[in-house]
Structures are given as C-alpha cells and as structure tokens.
Image (cartoon, rainbow, N blue to C red; front, side):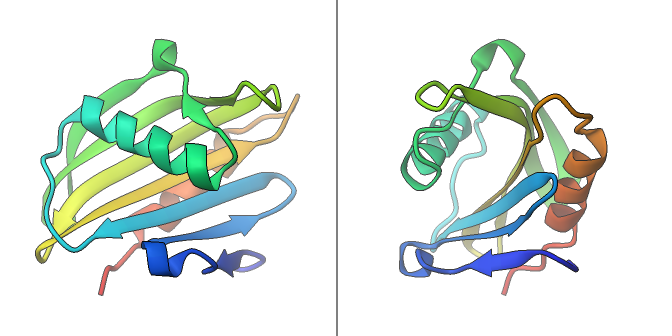
Length: 137
C-alpha cells in the first residue's frame, strides 16, 4: 500500500512485516513449509511467540480475544481479533490475525494498530485490507 514500508530483515526466519506511520500500523506474515492444525489456542500461543520475539514482547490480552472460522483463499481460516499489549513498554491496541493453510504451507498474517488516545477503527480496517489482499506464492 501507499506510504507503507516492508522489513525483510528476518525473512530467513520466515517472518516479514509491512508498516506505516501516523497512525502506526503493522502487518506481519509468517509461514511454515508444512500445514498446521487451525486451533485458536495454539495459534494464539504461536502469535505470542512471534510478537514476543520480533515485536519486543507483545502478547495477546486473553480477556478480549475472539476467534472465528472464516473462508479465506477458498479454504478455512481462523480469524483472531482482540487487544495486544506490551507490559514492558506499557502500550497496546487492537489486532486482527488470519491463520490458514494454502498449497501445503501454513501462513499467519497479523495486523495491529498503535494510536494512543485516538480512534483506531479505520487504521485497523486498513491492516485487515492488506491481509485480505494477501496472495501467497
């Protein structure tokens, strides 16, 4: 998207992310070369492992977590949504996460917003639009 940037520093670890500012928005994509069971709890744990490592300790606030199964790329997808937090930096905001299997690979695409004291719905919709236009290769 316009005025977004890509960071591929961790591509060798199958993790890339796009980001934009004002407001701050991130979309990461993680993949594995095998399929994975689409179980919300294990997907939440995986997201926390990834964001803990690549986003300096972010995690899901389980009190606000919602999970649903939707269709995406002609197959099942678990869509997680809720609130992320970072206890060390005392920050957080909304997120949306899509996890799915496609052509023998597992993908996790996650969008989050950080915009303290301001409305976040439009920015979150932007991150979800980026995710929904994802076309894995």
